[in-house]
Length: 178
Image (cartoon, rainbow, N blue to C red):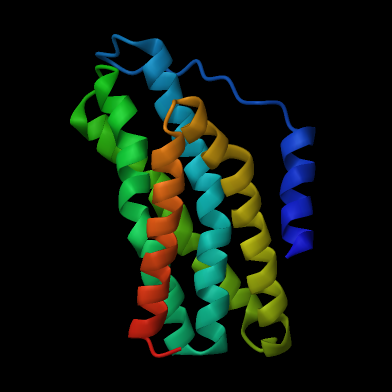
């Protein structure tokens, strides 16, 4: 867990923050469009360890893989909306917003496939891979997502969203009997 979180910390402090100069027809609000692109990049990066968690948990047992996939799927819908909304609101087309959201989401199954291929035959590494992916996701959540939501003035809704997310995961775990 700590290795995943520390790896993300090292990446975060080592790499410069990305600035975009992408042109999209119809964009009226560059700032909003850039925000959407940054969200898409962030979600794409965030989807790699999510996919790895699904792949690694599926290698452990298909039931665990299904449970992890269901839990992650619960928050993929708001991620897609969070990606598409600023793109569309900037003046870009619905197709551009959909396309960007779709591509950022497709990183996840690629991460799942990569983890499944790498971990097949190495069952002993699955718990470490799951812990690493969890550390990455917790770091991204605490370092990027929660502060961004709070900066926008949504302190109470941020806390409520985290609580609702936890309850949803308890329900998923209960539904799969684990």
